[in-house]
Length: 449
Image 1 (cartoon, helix red, strand yellow):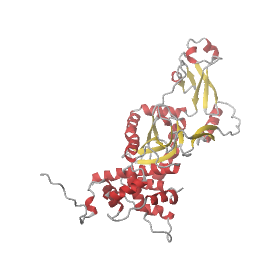
Image 2 (tube, one colour):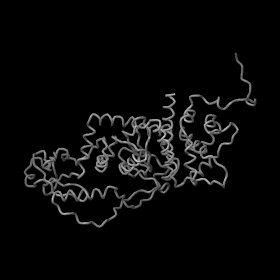
Image 3 (spheres, one colour):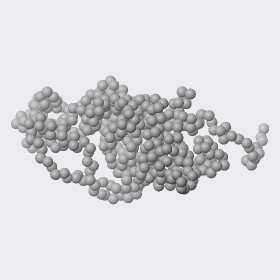
Image 4 (cartoon, helix red, strand yellow):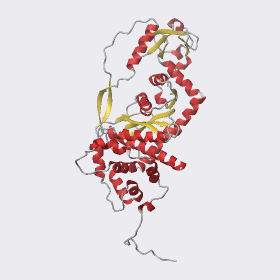
């Protein structure tokens, strides 16, 4: 029967907002299983006890969490969504006629009250601790990687600047290892070199000076930030999220962030699985010093075209010599300041070698093979990768940290920076990671009933 519905929008109706929110709604699970009371204590030092208008910081943060749960990129849009979405109002404790906090209130708190504070890092840490209390963090196996976060900047608007290259944190340890190795081989100590700050030229965005220009093979050139993330094997809880400019190498902050997790959460880390970008001798040495089983993907090296690769030269550890494919021994010569041992061939024998043209193009017909003083640690990591345990762990890496990145980009709007500046990018990454962890905690506990 054709019967148009009469206009009933102006009728008064008595309803409970509690009845309007579905029982299986995500925000119901979040509200039931996540304790937000810690936020009040974390932000109390930034509020006055006697002056100003009364404010509810927990409500403001929960409103921000809604934006990150559902990928709402604009604070103005977030305000509009909360006004019309009953589930959002219920989660915030607002009645149907209660006014919604203005978007400018969130902006002011973020730009002024919490500027230059660690409150977002502390909130992220507290969520991780709640996951640990629910036994959702094993802490034994960690997976780390980084992904780019496109900066809110035009890649064509930049200046070229010369800046000082960052000093590696392992320089002192490397210098000591070099001196010990030279002494072991009867070489004189290296003369003290006047410290000269290395400089490099970079592109600096005029729109967002904090971001970095990323130029990598098979990737789009852009100004971006890097989200360095670590996840735990047990439930894929994110245990660390750290932001750097896009021109910082993946391996630079790794060991310091690993140490922070171990210290902050008292993790008993036994193994880590990493991408090939982390296959550096300092990281391999650092994992060995921490008695951690490291599994790092193989990095394919490209030797000079027409010359045989280094792996065809066999290293004899007992005699400390390299043996070339033709059977000649390359003996130790010296250890450089950069930490490389040099092994050289006899040019007289090389001159008569049938493989000379495939081996070297040096004018004196001498082959030089280098070996880092910490090379044995890298070889150990290579052996780990080829072991049964290593193959299993590396297989899980894609299912863990890579999936975490995919969820944050597809579901939580982390493909682009909402705002400009390193601090704002860090806030976005930390709160997105915290919301991902909250979802995992709530959905898991809801399944357990």
